[in-house]
Length: 102
Image (tube, rainbow, N blue to C red):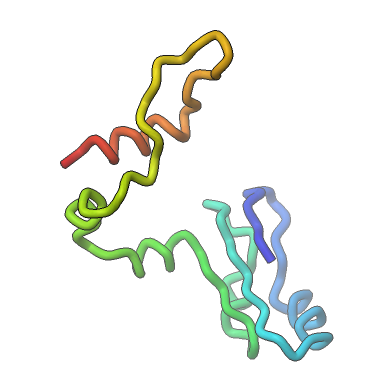
């Protein structure tokens, strides 16, 4: 289950507990919203794993830049926009800046 809306509505633990009761498999809730689409108590439910942006940040290696450059490029090389391709959006430019930083 993925949440990334950042709206005022969020999935409460009580609601998810009802859904969880219908399955024997582990439920993974991925919260990509900065304002949290899932109640933090969701992660305390049995059989539910809650992944948030913060948990990903905490699990990321601290020396990310040195590891970044040892691997194959994750982003395609920059190309000048042609009439057929769109300019990179505001979410792509910061990624390119990070990739360019040694």
